Length: 352
Image (cartoon, rainbow, N blue to C red):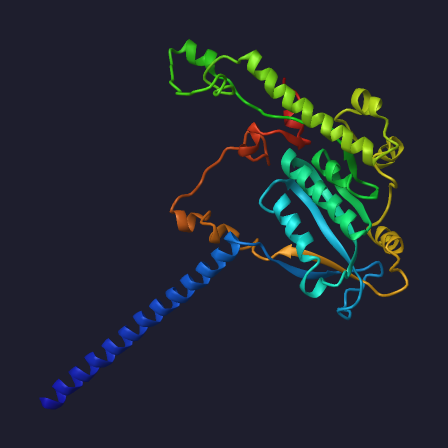
């Protein structure tokens, strides 16, 4: 009997210890994960960081070279400008990192912009352009742009920072213009069905774009003035940096149209059509006077892009909510609909 009681006690003790160890282990793991995400979140909330990726040179070589070798920095302008993965802050971080750590001592001798973008926000397009122009002036490095796909609107704005612009045989270039919207107005529909709403404001025209009241033509004129200002800024940048482009034809003939590479070259938007990425690299190395020695092509990619949704609490796992959205304009962020855009978007072209 004593042996049986001892066996039951030992069995209970063994089970208790295993359960305690399991709970302790799970708790320790959760704590470690929590610390990791906490530290990572602080990193994301502070300064952004990048990681170096070696890209092929003109001969297709990507073996690491000595730390003293010259570098051509590749910057991708891919997708919507102003999005989480392509904005002025991230490009500025890449430019800053290109002068530090393993790239210090002026290793970066040139920049190649690899462009495939329909454009995006006015602010980010201009800020990226301005950052590249300032970098080029301060460090006296040539910048070439290679278009492999689309270079429209804000993409073209950024491309104007380059000393020369090249395009593949299948690229499309242009769309010099600015747009805002769409903004829908349901005031007449509400009146028809006897629906009313109240919005409290102070300041004339504060609810200018409210969809619940008739459009105010006087108020809309102020927004049109802003678009006109942005448009003049765009055309000034194009004409200043693309001297073969005629301002009068740009405004009255070319407008916001897209063109194939040969036509874009004829207009003056680009310098060479039917180019290849590696031929552009070769010309850029010659322009930077590094063609006689081995050089490295380096891309600096944001290191947190895969985890940022989790770290910033945007995932439904953290929020406990699943977000459903109906895209009125496919691919267009709804937050952009009230902002000035350098963007090629055919679905918006029939606005006011």
